[in-house]
Image 1 (cartoon, rainbow, N blue to C red):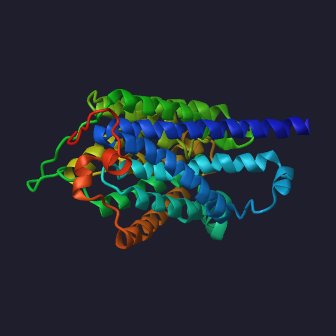
Image 2: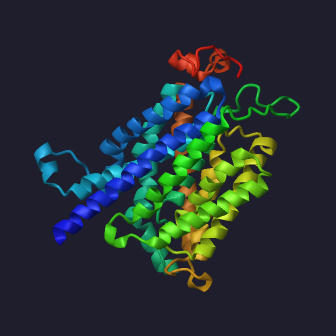
Image 3: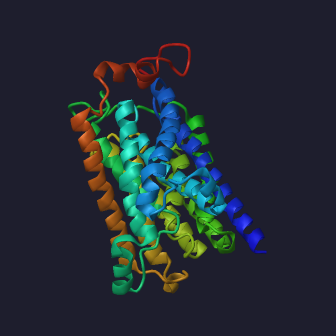
Length: 400
């Protein structure tokens, strides 16, 4: 029975890793469908190469920073390790690699390719695993202090804050340092609309992400004996709430509708194992409405050219999810309990602080050293031609 249990755990977390790996194709198609046609190839290449760079950074540095574990022994010694230990690395890597995929969507259409990859290496090697170690490995005594002070640790079951808020706030810093796309805003303050190049591809990306998210959330149990149907139910309800809020708040706009489920799923990650399904529905609906409102504010009032809206979608909805776990996770509101609002608030704020400080260090240093921004002519021609020497279709489509 022990052998069967061990093998089942390996298969369980391996399937979770594969589902989250598939989500990266969702990131790719979501970005491809949102950017203009002259940047579609670059969107596909960035997400794929980001994953490879993340794998190298997390293998050699990040996983050791987060958990104090490394694989610097002979293959014979590695083969004798539990298969679970090795597959767990794969699973957690897919979470780490989501962070630069999030950043990629914000800085699309004007970021240099190689500096972005360098940022990916530094973020996945150092910034993300630093906070991961605090939240998920009880490093530096933060969780112990929160438990002693507020009777509960910071709880983030599947990464509302650890993955999404961190990625979203890192993306915001990078977007601000880059500046808006040329022609996006006029001196009078009016902005070009730059509509999505392909709603079908945008929708495909949203669907792939939504399906894979059930691996992201449910498999965060990491062993088969801890799997919870409640996590699946809450993820479903939050997704539904996000879709409906995106539909009504976004006035039938297909971009908002298809980002609605993502907003809801971002927000439910932290408390999906704690909440009642009604609490999950409310959490998702608030997130969907928050995304629509703040995307509009960010783009039109603040003049922050966050192409895919990664700050409102991941940064703000992720932070809301961390806080919501401390509200709807309480027994008084139908939750499982064992959570503290103050611990959630402080843990969420700490994640944001680490992301902002890390973003300033990483992207600020890269901007000063080698620059982040494409040349004006290259940006006008599009990243596809300027970086990859090919377009997504046979014709040169500069200006799209």
